[in-house]
Length: 212
Image 1: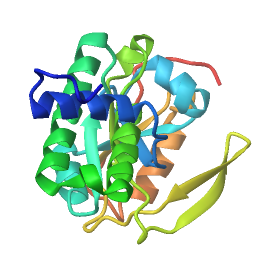
Image 2 (image 1 turned 180 degrees about the horizontal axis):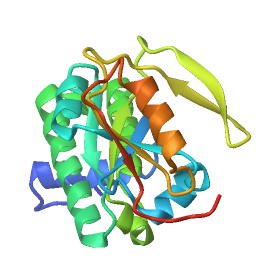
Image 3 (image 1 turned 180 degrees about the vertical axis):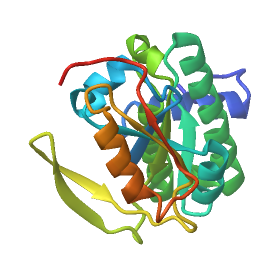
């Protein structure tokens, strides 16, 4: 279909890339997930050990600055059809520009790798709109050769992961006790642990009440 008469080369390439993306499996990718909502009951239940965990608050601008030099890409998750389509169009346009300027149409190996990476990035960037209240932000790392894959247990499953060390460290601004963990003893102990290392970090409590 890329050879239809009367269609400009960029548009033909765009159609060809779009078709090719459906045939090439995505590469592996690793992501760390964050949220704008630092105290949301549904997330305490889903991700915070039933409200018995803590929420770590980070300085968003500093986080982006410190990850930009580590081959890590950050972006907001898209939940709705219109913004998802717009993201796909943007990625396709970038791919076509890359393919045409670098002459990748006749080099299958790098072209295939570009398609695999793009598929992975798009897959990670979208979720069903039923999750829209989470307002999620993700930092994504592709498995370049310099990264060592490790394994650990999460919720009873063996999961691969990679470690990324940030310099300076994570810009932690607050730690909030979950609704099933908040009490004066917990707050005092957490303050004693955190203060020697992060004296400016605020120790907070969830506004919700939730029995453990």
